[in-house]
Amino acid sequence: MKTEAEFSKVVPDHNNIITEWVCHQLGYGTEWLQNYITYGVLRKKKIIAGLIFHDIHPGDDLSWTIYSSDKHWCTRKIIKFFMQEAFEYFQCRRINILVNTDNKKCLKLVTGLGFRNEGLLRRFRENGQDCYILGLLKSENKYQ
Image 1 (cartoon, one colour):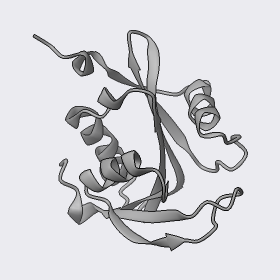
Image 2 (cartoon, one colour; image 1 turned 120 degrees about the vertical axis):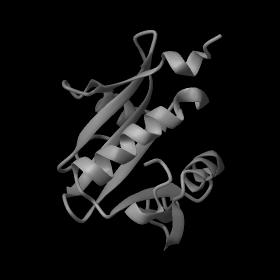
Image 3 (tube, helix red, strand yellow; image 1 turned 90 degrees about the vertical axis):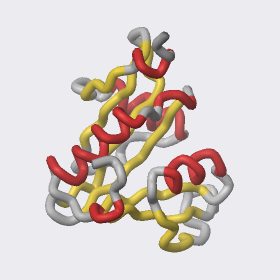
């Protein structure tokens, strides 16, 4: 029997609907985004997650911003697709991600994907929230 997660699919965001959904859920506007591409994860035609590739420097690095409303969005197949986009399509050597220090679920997710904590950005957010910066090198990608 197939699990609910197996019925999820990744779609590109052609009209900024997913980008705006991710940013709204995180309490951001979209004005901070530069040089970005967004993908959504849909189940039964409903957005359950979005991943924004931003600050893209092909051959060098890019950053991810992720939001999900369903803990089952993150399948091996979906993560492999996102890793291939970063490391093969954009030919990046690293992915960067910022995570609020109090966001334990996200920290667990990204460290489970292989991201390593590289430092603390004190009072980084507009509200004074501290953030960890995490990175994943191409050589550390376990989803090849």
